Image 1 (cartoon, rainbow, N blue to C red):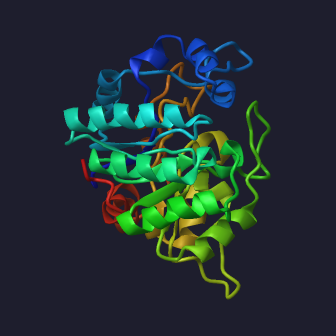
Image 2: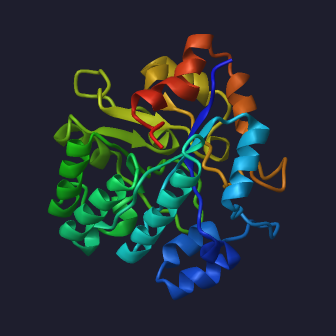
Amino acid sequence: MPRVIDCHVHLYPDAVNRDPAEWAAGHGEPHWATLCTRKRKDGRAVQGFPSVEELLAEMDRAGVERAVLLGWYWERAENCAAQNRFFAECVRAHPDRLSAFATVQPAAGAAQAVAEMRRAGAEGLCGLGELSPHAQGYAVAGAEFGAVLAVVEELGWPVNLHVTDARGPHYPGRVETPPGDFVKVARSWPAVRFILAHWGGGAPFATETGGFFGNVYYDTAASPLLYGAGIWREFLKKTGAARVLFGSDYPLNNYPRETETAEMGRLLAEVRGAGLNGEELAALLEGTARDLGMTRG
């Protein structure tokens, strides 16, 4: 049985967890509040706000060896910096279990974003994302993001980008992410490894010749909320397992009809029951994440 690296996990400091909605109101993050503090129709929260200790306990229950903490696509640069510092503390405390990506707000200025990336890298963070140019308000092909990607290329970091399926359900806070933007950025930065979250919107990005971009990967975050269990075999049949990384989007509750709280193990059971062979599972659950440098703590 391959070991498991969960490549798409969110975590927040105690100041956020105590009252997420109040924190968002006081720190200028209305979009995050709409997405992350909303309730389902039955009144239950869409996600939890676990502590570091609660995350580690859930990893132990599920059999997850390492979690990769992803930053949020914050609207304000100071909130990016605060999360990066929190993640650095988490990685220092648990280098054997946690890795972390930095987050920045290029719309606040390229120089500030680049300086924050370099500072976060010096503190042990090993990637960039989850970013969303469409939600944060900068152009995929703009100078600000270009300056950020130039440093990403220099550092050898992977970049996780938020992607929405144009065919998917409407929900509060949904932001459209035109597929052509991701094709453009992948073509413009061939040395940068891009991870397109949420299965890249459900379809792998092909070149004009029918092949797939060699620098584009996909994660499986929030899969059960967006796609049926057949997505695992269907998608990997097109791209190969080496292009897909297991990600749960914990602490998002992927199975609200079955459970009250978020669980990593339930999604792992789904992928293990999807009919993939041992080589595919090894790449999906661990190998590709290691190849992309996600085990640096």
